Amino acid sequence: MPKAVAHPTDSRLLERCRCHLVKAAVEHGIELRQNYSREAPRLAAQVGRYAHARQYRRMKKALRTLRSRVGRVMRDVDRQVEQVAETGRVALKELIARVKRILSQKTKDKNKLYALHAPEVECIAKGKARTPYEFGVKVSITTTHTEGLVVGALTDTANGDH
Image (cartoon, rainbow, N blue to C red; front, side, top):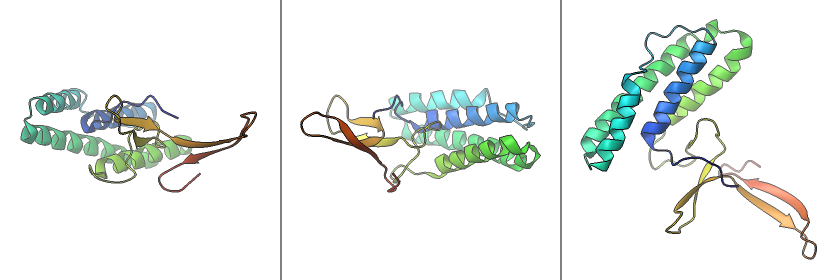
């Protein structure tokens, strides 16, 4: 099943991580030292501009700075997660784990996290010019030969879970 997930450029995904962390911190009453609400979106936009202009060294520097800003916010929330009530603590820890995974993943890694809100999404390489990549979940469906009734369905994940 294809999902409506945009191509996860590093800068956009990092900016989404920061936004989700700041929003969760406000919801749970965590006082952040700094949330980089002005600097981080500007850095994310700069990364795209530098990439378009083929200024890759500047792009990598801006991306590195953005990654460190997101890491700072994440560590600030992580330090104060024990102050949160038990009901919200589990969701907050799950969000922190996803952000850590995004911060640590490299370009060539397998089982990358493409969307913060949907961890099950994978990159399905289609190999066609009009749609080189599709983001979604691969599904196998078994039907009967004559009537076409669905007999079984199975999700194919990269790590082997069904």
